Structures are given as structure tokens and as C-alpha cells.
Length: 594
Ligand code: PEP
Ligand code: MG
Image (cartoon, rainbow, N blue to C red):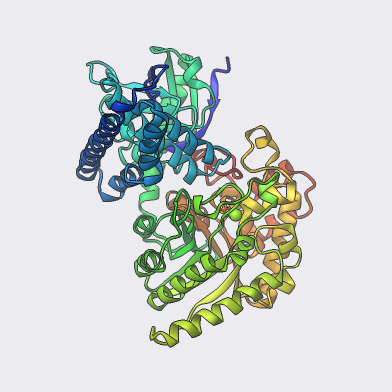
């Protein structure tokens, strides 16, 4: 067994303590499960009673979370409440009971399995969250139906703090952690943005996710070091390792204090170059955190939350309210809203997308939008209306060719005319940009630049398409390297094309959140970096610690490198020793979706 396990950092902090392994699956449903016809209606009643009971429990948990952690965290439970009101889940289960004479638990288990299958081919964090929510709902309803009591977490006994190790954590459990007892969390699966990670961060419980099969290998009582900042767990640490981590803990606390002071300072290099530092957000509610962490606007607002896992197309007014909320949070600054990036691994239930052999090379992003004008027009109309409340920049994902931009512009022009005719006033003041995420778009950036108002580089996809390495395939994680010379050279083509055309070039992929990546991008002449709210302070620290002139030298030299390692060492050498790179959050994998 490998003693040192690397996962994904989900909540910072270093702790040392004994493991408590928790197995929290839904209770098993007994075999059999056929009932006499005359019992059917009573069984349906019993099922509805269990659903109502579960709803009430979740409402109480939501309220507890609201009081303890705040409204944003409380909203994590809303999807579960919606699931328990969804006819496709609840109504269909009742139908299965009636048609197949199944017990409520058997019928519900079937229906849940069908929902899971629908989503199981994806690795997208938003969908994984839905699966985790569904597991939470399933366990709760089944426990009620089977008369099983809540699992005894035995987390309240006296003694030293424990590090909870589990396959995954449901939001319910994460919200109820007793942070005086649970000093750390380590899970086999999960992502940095999953609901349980959000809750762990809010409760300041150091946490590492995506650790493979840790929960099967560790036993309750085994001593662990958990480094939530680096995303690492060490099993049975030596005395030297424990001492080294105590020192590191001290250093990181000092570093965090320093970062706190940065929110209000400008993102300007030592030689006076201003870099617009903006935030990536996935939900409207995150705009507040972005602002608090010092973002100068939003560089990427992903809009898939409006459609993924939903059974119906979202209405124009609902979308308008979501976009407006973010624009109003940044009335003076740019807000870049990306149109739906569906397909790949993000499938809304209502689109009935065909199963594809190669979804990432398939019907995805702008291709889907242009083929589904009803869906796209509603989004464009909502965006144009919301644009009246700020500096809206509409951004198209996975653009590969000029015709896609032109077709979108024609649609926008039609929507503007419609909206004005409907009395929405004069619509104007928005701009239209392309994400550069494929080698095709990068190489033809000089031509594309004549048709758009800005570029934003999605390095997460650009890297996977340039290197032909699936960003979600953990087996290929080592091959997915954002510092590959081919990527660096494409970035140079894009930055130069933007510069020649006088367009702003921003980078919103994860490379911008890596200290060496940010340094490289500044050197290539990128105007803006957009990173998740939690990375804002660290990247501001990088910007304020380097000179643009030095970054330019480093970038020029990187362009002559022949391997990813060479690129990294050139960058590290030019950046100097003033910044301790080991203090930065996250695993050093700049590449993969998490
Ligand atoms: C990217 O590809 O870099 C990007 C920012 O978009 P997403 O991660 O949503 O595909
Ligand atoms: Mg992308």
C-alpha cells in the first residue's frame, strides 16, 4: 500500500490524527418485494409518507445549515427538496408500485437506479453533485421505509479529534459535522466544487477528496496526516514526517494571513503592469464571494447550472434573474457570461442527447446551441435583457470557426429587434467573444479576431484537444500537462493575434490559477486572468511579486523549450525564490476537471 496518497485539495489546513472509517451506504432493500393487489394503494400512501418525512427532515437540516453556516450553504439542500417533488422520481415510483405490485422500497430503488444510469456516464462536477444528492435522498427515504435508524456516527464520544475517511460524503452528513470532533475529511471520490467540499470549507474542516480507494485501505484508528492545501494524505506517518508537517502548518498559517490582506490591493506587477484579475463562478450566489476576495469582475460565469440535471428548459425570466444578479454584484466591472456549454459530459435531461462514441469530439457547446435555436434564443434574450444592468460580455464556448460566430451574431440581432419591439427599451452595450479551446481556433485566431470583441482561453479544453488527452481520465493524468511546449506555442499565437487586433485576451482555464501558469501568461502578454474565488488571493500575490519584463523573458525562453519539464524549470528559474510554490493551494495538476 502506498503510504502517501495524493488527491484534490478541497479545504485547506493540516491535521494529524486517527482515522475513523465510515461506510454510509443506503440500507439494503430486502429481496422479494411483491405485494398483493389490494395493498397497492396503502403502499403508495406509505411511500408518499416517507417522501414527506424526508422533505421535512431536509427542511430542518436546511434551516440548521442556514443558521450555522449561512444561506448560500443552506441552498445546497434545495436540489434534494426539488427531487422529492419531481414527478419523474416520485410519481414514477408510485406508478411502479401500482403497475408492478412492488413494495415502495423496491420501486423507489428501481427508479433511483434509472436516474443514476442516466447520469452515470459523466464526470462533470455538477452532475456528480446531483448523483450525490440523489444518494442522500435515497438513503433517507429508504431508511424511513425500512425503519432503519440514522447511522450512529459515534462522532460525539470524548477524546482526540478524528479524521473521517469515507467513500464519499453526502451533503447531509457534511452539514452535520461536529467540527470540534472531526478535524479532517478524506474521501475516495468527490471534487473541489462538490456540495460536501463547499460545506467542509465553510466549517473550516481541512479536507482532501478524490483519493481513490483510501476508505478500503485505511482502518479506524490508523494515524494519518492530512494536508488539505496540498491535497495529500499520509498513512502511518513517521516522527520526521509529523514534525515536517507541523512546520509546514505554521508556515501556511502565516501565508494565509498574508493573503487575507491582499483583497483590497491592486493586481499590478512590480514594474507597474495591470492585470485584470477576475473570478470564475458556477452559480449566481458565488458572485458575492468573488467580490469579497477582490475580483475585478467575472471572467467566466458558467451557465450550465440552469440546465444540467433538469427535466425542463429553464424559462427566460428565471435566466434573466440569475444573470442580472451577477451583473448587479459588479455594476462597474466586466461580467463575462458563457452561453451553454452542453454535451461532452454535461447533459440536460430534456435535450435527449444521443449517446455518442466520442462526446468530447461530438455534439458540444456552441454546436448544440446553434442546432437548438429555441434553447439558445431564450438564453440570448435573457442575456440581452440582463445586459442592461452592467457591462455584459457574452462568451461562446468551443468556437472553431467564424461561421459559428456569425450565426450567433445574426441570432443576437434578431433577438435585439424582438426585444425592442416588445418594449424592453434600447438594447445595446454588450460585446461578443470567443473561447479559444481548440487548436483550430488558436491557429486561426488572427482571422477570428476580426469577428469577435474579445478572446478568452479555456486552457482546460485547449490542453486536452492539443494533446489528445481526455481531461477527465485519471489514467492519463500524467500526460495532461498544461506546460507542454505545443500548448505554450499556441498560447503565444492567441496572445499575439489578440494584441495585433487590439482585443482583450483573457485566460479562464485552470492554468491561470497556477503560479507558474500565471507568470507565463503575464509574460505572453495576456491582459486578464480569471480564476476561482479561492485562488484570487494567491494569484494576486503572484502578480504583485513578479515583474512583467522578467515574465516576458521567461515566456520567450519557454517558447524555445522542447519538453514540459523544461518549460516549468525555465519559468521557476525566472520567477526566483521569493515565492514558495509549495504554499499554493491544490494539487499540482493544472489540468483536469475537478
Ligand atoms: C476551459 O475549458 O478551460 C474552461 C474554462 O471551460 P470548462 O472548464 O467549463 O470546459
Ligand atoms: Mg472548456
